[in-house]
Every structure is written in structure tokens, then in C-alpha cells.
Image 1 (cartoon, rainbow over the protein chains, first blue to last red):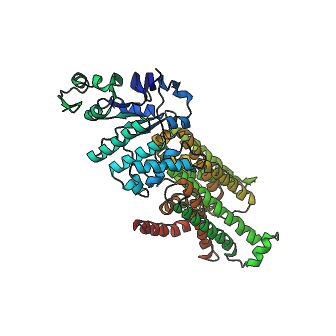
Image 2: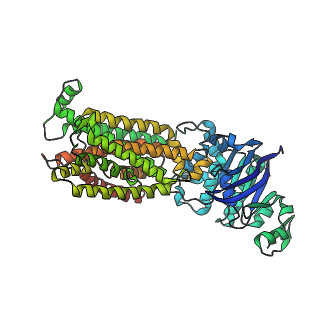
Image 3: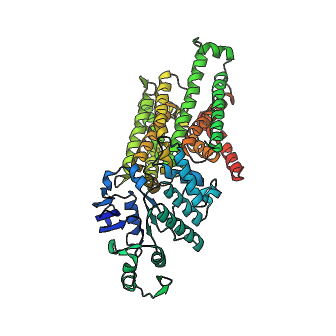
Length: 255
Length: 331
């Protein structure tokens, strides 16, 4: 379909001979805010790595706006799709600015010299994420929430049209969770950035995601409009637990 | 360009200037009396054997320091481990086996274009690089953890072979072996200088345009991929370049400890982790350091000479501790 930014067709991927994702197919709509949920071990992180070009599918095809991604070079890929991984340990003491600047690597030449546009982009992202106040700070001396923001800023600097996030909210307090969601929604609305986000908290999905993909045991259990996919029955089926849904404003939330 | 970057470049240029000064000074230092006039004459084309020897020696100090420091910078970035160094991959042990093998076979003084032990050392190192690389491959990818483990395993194996060779060789061979293991910057043939200098400078020049990519890899294979870096490609290139540089240096001057591990470490403390800055800074700081260490070798026990390997650690370790202390205070 024309308005799909991403489409997976019978993709199988894994590590060595171990298949984690088994023949999965789904699509992500252009401009959507899509959540990926599923129990532990359902293949969410493997999916993120595959979408980030880090893990090559054993079989199947991934299309980015109807182009087979195997025909896209690494550098071009990084201008279209980026990934914010789960909290990652960093060994070397990079400053916030240097780390975020790496997001411009797909655009810079040999030596990594920044053009005026690169600098403008970096400054803008630093300002939006509020990191402009701590540019010179060592990333290894930051809290989990601040560090997650740095990783997000680095990805936003890539100016891609699709951003994939692997549990960006997991270790964050409510304030940082809200800030990250707010930034993503802002980019989603104002810059037409399509967001694909793995989330553990189902209420976050219900509240913010227009679409949802439910993974279970390496396969897609359901996908589509959030209200249609996430309900009492699917939760019971997938997470093997009973929940109650309550109306909160115009949204359903569960507890 | 930001103020911070300009400051770093200025400091690197100043250190380079000091290193150039140390290079000239090292031509003056030693048991034989040489004055500035003699050096001037030498550079104008008047041959002087003492200055010629010292000149080759100073060149080897700069080449070795550049090669080992650059290899250290690359491997620490590549392996994401500030404790990695050129010797962790077993390359030094591999080349030592080559050299010791040649000495034990009575070829210690043989010469085919270059000294035979040196050629054997280079071949030994290259074979080790290939073996370690093959062992570190996992599903066709270069695994950082496997690389360290394979290096340690190969290093231990080769070290025991080396010890056995020393144990079972005759007295006259042992002197040659020990001298080789301790390292000496004194070479007697300009071809050695050209050989190692050529390899080291070519490797560094090849690496410079890819330092941006190595920066990304030093944060993580996945994160580097997400900004469009061909990670496997970059890891292989830097591994091979580090290996070849170490092989060239170790086969020419023997094992010189400390430089490859600690100079990149000190430089990172002073200049930050950006490899584009770290590479030139490590090269000039390392060169200056090794030139000083070499001068000390010559003057501490005149007319006897200490092996360079002893002095690098003797001078380097307190310096390293000093750097650790001042950077801990955040000054």
C-alpha cells in the first residue's frame, strides 16, 4: 500500500541457527505512532535490531516505502530509519554534544566535519530535548533518564522519517517518561516523524499509540488500530492475566 | 570551529613542536661529544657515523611510538576497552617466536635485504594476526569478546613456547634473545627505518579518513550500525592496521612495553575520547615520551646503556600515576 512507510513480508530473523522471529508480516502506516507490545521473549528486541539493519533477516523482505531495504546502502538507510536501543553501557567519556553529533554521521564527509546545516540541526535537537543546558557533561556521569534523552537526541539528529525505539521508558521516572513521549509526539505531529516504539506499559500504548503490533512467541499475534487490537481478550490471551478496562477521558485504560 | 577544539589543536601542535625539539636534542645526547655544528653539517650532507646512528635511533623512537600508540588507540576503540593494547592480541609473542626461532637456528646475524630475525619476527606476527582473527570470528562477524579471549589464549600459548625456546637454547643465543625481548631502538641499517617507517605511516594515513567511523564503533556495534557505519568492515580494517603496525615495530626494535597501552590512555584523559583528536595527540605525545626515555637509556649509566623496555615503564608508570591523580581532581 502506498501510505505504508514500512512493510515486512514473511521475515525470519535470529541469532545463528536460533530463529527468534518466525515469518512475521506487518506494516507501519506513514505518520503513525505505533506501539509494539508482547511478553518477554516474544522477539521485540530482535525485531528492533532487524529494523535497524543490525541483524540481517534470514528470510523475507523488508520494504521501506516500497523499496527493498537490501537495495539501500548503510549510509542511506541511516537517513531513513534510526533506532534508539535499550539502555546501553558506554565505556568512553564522550560529552553530550559529541555524542549527539554522531547522529549527523550519515550526512558528514570523510573527516566528519559539520556543515552549517548539521550544526543547525544539532542545536535545534539539543534545544528541544533540553540538553542544551548540559552539552559539556560526560554521558557516563548522567542518570538513566538523562542518558536516554541523549540517545534519543542522537537519533533525532539523523532526521529520519522513521524512528524505532526499544523500551525507551522502562527505567525512567514519570517526569522523564512524559518528556520523552512529549518530544516524540511533537516530532510526530510537526515533522511527520513516524514512531515505532516497543513498550512494556500497556497504558502508554492505549494513551499514545494510534496503532499497535502485538508480538507473541516470535510471530505477530495482531496488528492494527490500537482500540481494535488491545482489549481484554488479547491481553488475557497473550499475557495470561485478567485485567479491567476503565474509561478515562476519551481513552480506555486498564488496571 | 569551537573554542575547545581550537585549544586542543593548538596544544597538539605545541607538543609536536616540543617533540621535534626532543628529536634534535636526542642527536646531541650520548657518550660521544657532538655539537650543534656537527648536526648542521650532517644535515648539509657531511656524513658523521655517530650522528647517523643517533639519527636512525631517533627515527625509530618516533616510528615505534607512533605505531604502538596508534595501534593502542585503534584497539582500545575497537574493543571498547581502555585496557587493551597492541600486545594483548599475542602479536608481540608471535613476532618474538619468529625472531627467537631465527636466533636459535643460528641466523641471528644473517641478512637478506633486512636482518633475518626481523623478517622472521614480522612473518611470525602476521601469522599470529591471521590466527587470532580467524579464532575471533563468530557467525562470520568479528566478536569483540572473542578477539580479546583469542588474543589472550594465543599469547599464553606462544609465551610458553618462547620460554621453552629460551630454556633449551645455548648461552650465546640467550643473550641475543634477551636483548631482543627487552627491545632496543638502535638499528644499524637505514632500510629498517624505511621499512617500519613506511608501514607505520602508510597505516596511519589509511586510518585517518576512517577515524570518524571508529568513533561510532567505540560506542557500540549496534549504535554504529544505526548511524550508517559498516561495522564489520571498519573493525576488520582497524584490526589489520593495528596488527601490521605492531608487527612492523616489534620486528624492528623488539618489545617496548607501556607505550601502546598507556600513552592512548593518558591522551584520552587529557584530550577526551574523540579518536580524530586522540590519534595525532597520542602519536606526538608517545614520540616525545619515547625520545625522552631513549635519552635516559643512554645517559643514566654512561657508557653502558639500559634496554629501552626497562626505562619506558620506569619513567612511564610514575607519569601515568601523576596523570591519574590530576585528572581525578578534575583539574
